[in-house]
Length: 384
Image 1 (spheres, rainbow, N blue to C red):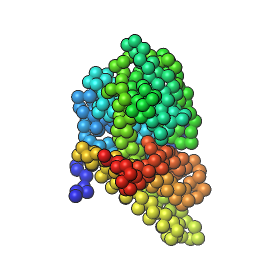
Image 2: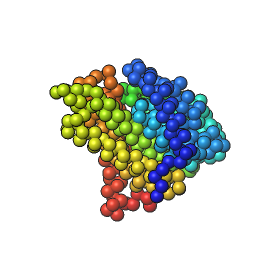
Image 3: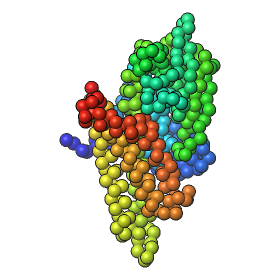
Image 4: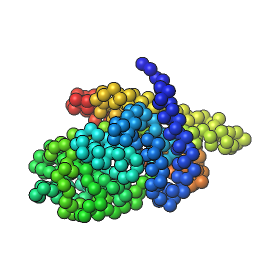
């Protein structure tokens, strides 16, 4: 087993880290406080090829692989939870899903624009009464002439209010439940689509909202694959977006660790650096354990995907562990910095707010633990 990154991977990692530190870190606190959507930074990220690691060159990607993608996301996620998000809403939501499942015409129509940052994407799964239970999706698409007519409400769609294209999962046959789900790729500016932003605790530079479809008419060629294939398409999308989420969580855990170490060796109490106190050392050690374990779970997961290995189980493990590590690290960092951690003078309060999201999105920790446990118990094998 080789645990060394290749020179190409190291070059990609350095480029992403330099961009994150030089372009994102100096401005992100101001963006977050103003709830400003950083479209220009997303465009710069696209120009550097950040979103195309798993996309073939003929569609504007670099095809450098899943491990390259994870390294880039980790670097960006270390400085901003908000700017980690377009790796899902652009790279692994619409683009990678179309690359795997879309028609040639759909790929050529949408993927190059997504890669260049000229159009923004989002994907819409969750509904007011359908979250973890994807089979409960109630939004419908019914054939009328040469079109489908969509009706229903999606919620918690990140970039829903700013997207140009929506990957949406709907029911084309309610009686079939999961087997009646279908996937569509549609123009977000069509008549019959309205959006509303949702205020939330963190990631304030990543607008998240509700999307309402009211007799929205879309061409039949908006259907991805065949009717009834939506559930398996959705699960394959989540297998990818969970890797992105895990890599972002790893970056955030690293940020919490570094902020804690720096503060612990600067702050003095009782005539000593607070880093010499055993209780703080235990927190630092636990953060380090979480970072290192998460890193290798994620890198293994990405490597397996690069080899074409089906790894839904390993993806669930990596995402679940990394999310928990980020939340724990943000809590320990808050304790080490004390009142300064609670203050907006330091970024730790932002890390604390943003970290919680990792336990919720792309499959909550509870759902992922269910997948892991059922595999271990031979109730339902994740990699079947």
